[in-house]
Image 1: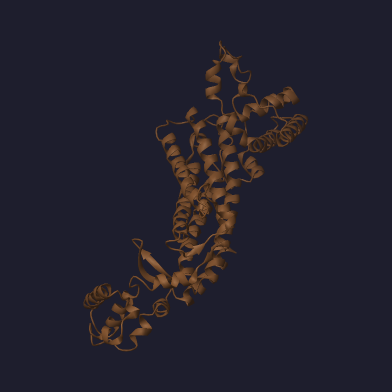
Image 2: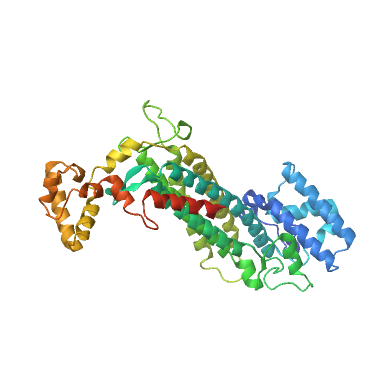
Length: 461
């Protein structure tokens, strides 16, 4: 079966589009999400055309009324989307012509679908970045609040997933605050490149009409105007950059998810998650599964995959616009939805995390976590660090054989490894002593954690 020629562009064609090709090439199933942005761009474009006398005031009024009517139809789910019209732009333009007649046919003067879609995507992404940033700031605030509650909670810090040194749980949470703070900075920085207007570039070479791009940019709230028409219609760097930033956010969420999953297991039992953010097993009645962080960890792959898809999409395209770029939207839209939802659920869940302080403390007492403190103690007594390291290593070896941690050694046992060790060593190798000795910018002492939380709150404001 053959379809009819598309009346908006079929003038030079003698045959209608093949039915399967029509379906294969259509993007309306997913790009109609841009509809309101397309209308927003058309209103600004038509206003500018009227101001340079390409449209009369009566034609402008008809077009604006028509676009408003179409907007209402879309919002109220009364718009008739047609696959025959391929995409969101031609669906809206066709409906505008139905409503306005000859005036509607003039809306496309001085522009192309190439610069139109590039503008729509930027308008869409500009709004989405602001919404995502709001969720990111909610998560940052939740982390600060939880860190404040847990700044005196002692837990083992890990390297290689082995107990390394005692740290404040609040300090650990602030490590994620730093990650998401960088993510916020990346979104802000990328926003500048999103907020650049390509409209007026037309198909690739600009237009012969005396358009006023500054005025259009002003109407649409763009900070800058693209400076090369060829680059403007073919550029998707801003979308790739966003998905790259989104991939980093998801990577950070995934790392946090992994730790929440470990901490909430019976093997660690460091934290408990609320029932409302967990699920049970269909066969094992005792189970409480951390499905939210597991799902977020799993969704990381789709955003990273979207980044690879966009990079691959663009890597071999000659200038300027190519039909390949129709494939930019689904990875972008999916990344936006995924990152928003994951940040939203984490921002809701984090404030409800409860620490099992005693289990954390008892775990920190195991694994010789204050061994470095003992070595530092000997260095302060005059030994070279490498000699101190060797001495403490022998003490740890002895502790393993005797099934004793350093805090369980008697003074005589400690002195047997070096005569410089005195009674004051117990202040140094206690968990509290270890943590509060690290009283410098970026350290894990309670004092420094409190300062970091205060600085973080100022930053978010």
